[in-house]
Image (cartoon, rainbow, N blue to C red; front, top):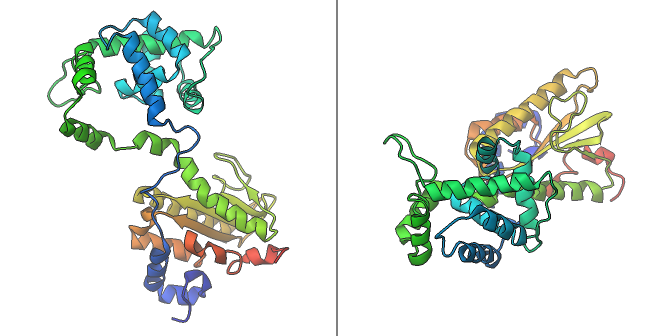
Length: 345
């Protein structure tokens, strides 16, 4: 086998030595699951603790949850809302749902997520809600006070209620005991086992993780003076049922498309492989607004792509070897048709 990387090989060589090229791609894949970007909305522990202590004070060590007092406090110290949601163990969308069901107000998931992000971006800035927004925030506080006061209802043995946790199982008495005495380390570990550490933060920065790879691709294209179109999430581009991440030189004349993905999950990786195979099929057949034979390039990262050899073979064959990782991204221009569009050296 003369070629080292799959993007250097002919299709015949790629087909004959697919397993060896899979090994080469696997060797260059890196996993970044041990470190995460903080992102703009990261809440540091001292700030979170400030919200917690504020809530603890106005509830007299969680002895009583009076909605008017907590609502006024939450406007003054918005992180109180984040602490309340954390006590419930809900996502913003879930909190919005139960609040809407209880109050009869329309409290959308988008509203709840936007409010949560606004607080995390500016945790020290008091909230000044409009007359339209205020009732929704009040409804969130009301349902939180009620559910935390009531605790977990009795459920059949085969079911598990979301409030059946150490600090909410028995209502305020559980919260007060946890605040006063803490919880056993085993209980902390058990809830971490059920909930995955950093899960909420990992979900909130998932797009930011992908942006790292896309920014690296943008840098390569820009430095080479290549015209390109970077698409937005869920954007519709004529000819594509799902827009690729990059189109060169433009969506009006797609000669090269680039799909970029970093994932630590093998299921997500498999979905991306299927997506790339579909693009290769579109390239082979062409269409009313697509030229036949446009080049399909995959730029990937994360251990998710390292789990299934057969999927990697499919990706290599679909792209004719044009699979790049963070380690090999500097070769992106040289070994693809992108070099035809280079204007700077």
